Length: 81
Image (cartoon, rainbow, N blue to C red):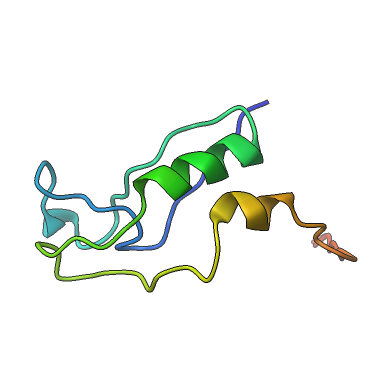
């Protein structure tokens, strides 16, 4: 399978190639083969951009380390109409 991730606005800089003309609906990232690969790419590409009017706060650690942690007990819900 493949993993896709839409990052938060300002997490990965868009300038100088893309402007804010889409009002934050466009982000740069890639489709990856695993969550780990997606997290490693995000570790390499995130960061502040002084030319951007928006920026995401710096993470407290690496995205790859967060992806490697045990998520703990998960709960799923199914909505049936």
